[in-house]
Image (cartoon, rainbow over all chains, first blue to last red):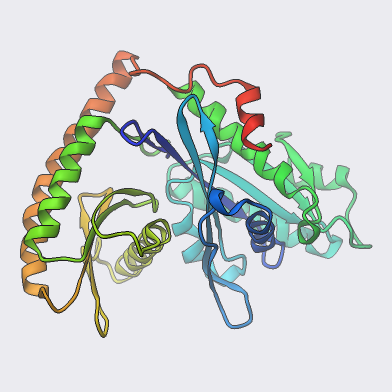
Length: 195
Length: 164
């Protein structure tokens, strides 16, 4: 649910990074934060535990530039990935305009990926959304690790509808901006469709 | 989609701005701002120069969302007011209808009683403005007319340029 302000000529869109615990959602935001010019970003807020596990959410506001005289602002959020933070995860999806699902490519995390994706669909449905109708990109993260599942297999399990997907090594920044761009593009095209 | 996008035009913005300025003055507050429930700042009044309003907006919305979650677990529909007391500054957070959050930051020059009183009055006025805003947007939508849509012409190139 974007906020379009004709008075200040701004468009605000909310993008949520979703995925199982320790898949690299916060790492994505940290990389984007590090690599963005100071005038384009606000503070990166992390509501995390002492061991740096996300407790509620991370938040990063980005102002990437103008389109037709309108300033485009993206508000990036992550959810806490750990299973028992289900209630918090639900809250963060409120008003979402686009979703990135960060999947952990390690074979032993495939079940966790699938469980998290199912959780995403349920939580979206509770807010009246359908994942199939939202701008949605999947990121296959941690591709540099030795024990990763083949992409074909991951796509079969997590991406039956063939949405845009990207390989990534978020900790090194590989694929991070490609993923963001992919979802941002879908969000903007959605706006174009609606207005 | 469960809700329509929030669209604000110059006229409504001016009315909201005026309402916030009035509240800021009458409640003797330091800063007053309005946030939508998704964490986006709508408008503010008072001296915001030293404040990170974007982060404040997002955290306030998170706070309201979490409190709303607690309320539902307790069988309440919502807690409509939150109040945090600090050593110097206090923050009063309240809901305006279902969609918008009104935040008042004040110090010892004001009081919780005064803030509550003025917030109540401002809330009624703001509600009216937002209701008009929503019905206006819906009418436009139904009539299939967008004012001067900045999106109709968006090209792939425009989007690529954002990421250069």
